[in-house]
Length: 485
Image 1 (tube, rainbow, N blue to C red):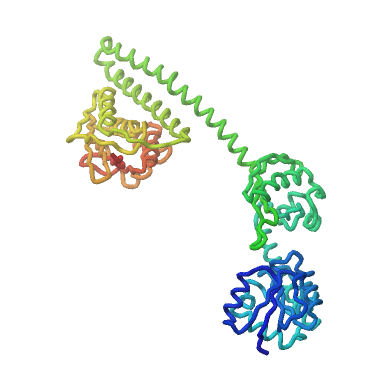
Image 2: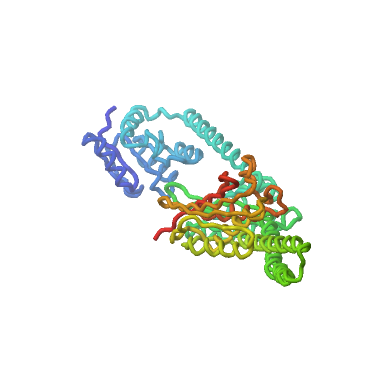
């Protein structure tokens, strides 16, 4: 049967306009905003009750069906709805229903669907209603089972409640935390749970989430299964497509171990700071006294003892270098707010070269070419990078006269500092290892802190460092980013 007139009961003018537009002037659509405004008589072939705009969907369908006894009623419901509501709508007198977001509920296909409905208003008999209800209920149970399976795979406790504080669901981890099965949780409010302390924590700030729609995070302690645990509760609004915020969903994260590790880290940091202070002041000061006295002894030692004195001075300077390395490494490790800056390359490198020449007077340090007056991306520890590599080339050198060559190359936005020595070199299978923690140069009694510190700092600067073979020893190459002007 061709539909010529439709009675729409609802308040969605845009939906009505879409139906009229689809009908192309072949169908007249009468509008009644509610049951009270229904016409006394209507020539409509079918009535559409838009439950998505009704305060009481089931009651609205029942009232329209009773008033329009001879007119078939089709209910428009939400795309995602409770099958129990579908069943109630059908039992209230609707001969059929369409889902708003489904193809049959869109104006493009709604008219054809209505024509089929109006031809056989009795097509949805009680047994058909029951069958449809069972199908809907079965589909809902499958969806709920999938949701339950997903939630139970989450190791953190998860729960969700409606706006009145009634638990709608939870996962297995939440059951364990509460110490009771979900059958004793779902459908109840927080005050009815056994673990009242946990229930109170879960309920905190619910009102803020419901009113603002903003997420909330709470950190507190709770006694769980006889043990004090530190937990972090995350909350977010539980929303529906058309009705907005309907409740609160939350998860609970046990951060007890994290807090223990943070406490341990704080204690270790304090110990490192103490060690750094001792290294910087006490040990280094004593070493400087020893080296000063050794210099005084030069005029009082004969040729037979001079070799021993030189060895003592060399080892003393080496020990001072180790204290510097330990200090610099400690400060680097404790620097939680690391940042880079524009650091002048020329003055930084020349300062370290002059210091190495002064400390190791027996070595020859040569600068090839000009050191460019440019700035690089680094921080105040850049001098430690150069000092450690320069000292490494002397301390691990087996030549009678250690020789160091330094030159700098600039290519585009990259600056490369080359430091080569005439020592024993580094085998290929050790070229990466020597930058590792605790690694030592060949035939060395050093701690290995220096090159590890170099690698750590250069990596922070966004650069790179590696060692290759020079003409007669090892060549360290430090690549740095050129700072923007």
